[in-house]
Length: 169
Ligand SMILES: *[C@@H]1O[C@H](CO)[C@@H](O)[C@H](O)[C@H]1NC(C)=O
Ligand SMILES: *[C@@H]1O[C@H](CO)[C@@H](O)[C@H](O)[C@H]1NC(C)=O
Image 1: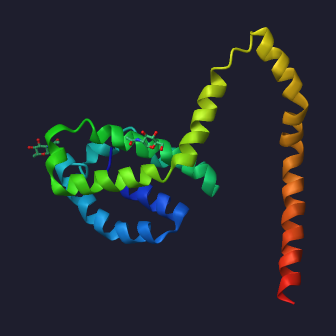
Image 2: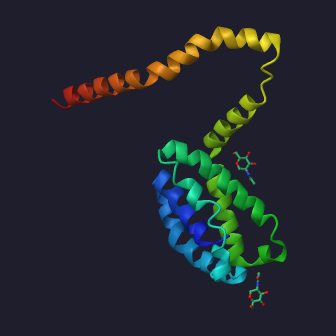
Image 3: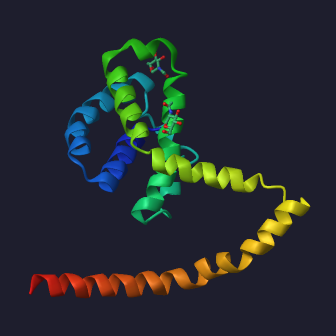
């Protein structure tokens, strides 16, 4: 696991939020990550064997809210890692990174909810009669969402653009 990835993740997160908090923590966190890389010998060539664990996966997630969903899970994996690095946690730079990750994690509550939805969906017993009746009842609205949502949002966007243009006059 290369700690360049920490920086990559933090940069991705900050591009999602584009907020002051993220911009202000990045330079400081970069220094701390350099120290962490030294602790973990993460610049050695063997680290690259077998490819990246996060960076490559992130590439197919392009839309901002979509990207936050996978980033929320990656951040929680980092937090899990920090819970498992033992005495290193007492070092100042490790504490700083850990705190920053906690703060970022807490700002991703909405994305965690979305992941929870997916997990709960996967658990639905589709062989259950009551669930099947509910499912059939919700089939048409579901297909409507799938097939009609894009055109409607497009029309809405157009309409609001028109309104904005009107307001300026
Ligand atoms: C990093 O490398 C040094 C020197 O080769 C070694 O003593 C240390 O145990 C290594 N640390 C880790 C976490 O691999
Ligand atoms: C990260 O945030 C999620 C959602 O807010 C929360 O459920 C989870 O406990 C947090 N993880 C840690 C390690 O704090």
